[in-house]
Length: 303
Ligand code: ARG
Image (cartoon, rainbow, N blue to C red; front, side, top):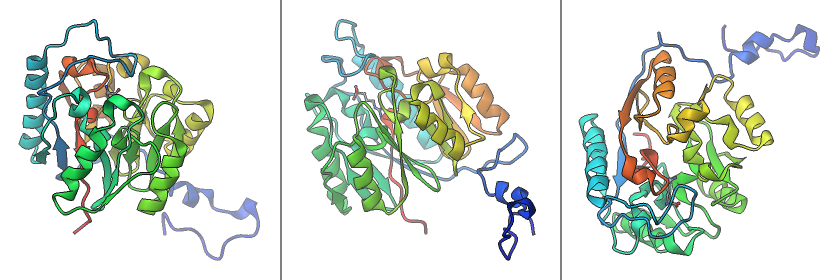
């Protein structure tokens, strides 16, 4: 039977059927495999108060002018696209004085209706954690108050089998352990080493099932080896695509919404049978974020 381990388990490695074992590794997908989208529920925050007045990542330069109106227009297009694709989009009210609140991905991590609240590293963003937690609480979700620093889905990316977790710049390993205990899912810690890719969602994106794409250069050698082991068939981004935030992408299993400048990455996704959709979010890039940063997925229990 293909894909089934031979029983009884062989005593000698020579006689072990490794092909059956290999069949259990994450399969490589090719363009011929049809892709199915699953309808998603997203939470977003309109960038009404977006500006760059402080700098907590290398992309933010307060001396560079930001066009808030253009940021809103670009963000509205992203929201409209999600609706056109059939997804549900809820909105949280933006708050004056919290210009980074538009990056909704950082507000929490939600898996099977369980909400793991965010606790920000930088004082400038500290008030966003309670704001997002209140949004969930007022809609009947129980929210876990985090003890350790974690910046929501900026650093936690959920695949079918694992939660991948970034550290090095923002979230801390203790926060990864806290998330594993809370969700009861294996959390894989990955160390980011390039300050331009300070959140995991700037260096890696979950595509479908246990399929991911990532920028190997953003990770420590050990973490890169972990990624190679877990995802031997992953889409690897070239530096030019990573630099335009190509990995800051949102997938519904079929459509992958990503910055439109990441053309090389879009071609690689197309080869896999996925449908890349390019978006222009130039104003929000000035704060160090793009498509995924603006999108928090509310994952519900399977029905
Ligand atoms: N200015 C924000 C910060 O540095 C950008 C956050 C981007 N969000 C994300 N999910 N990567 O915290």
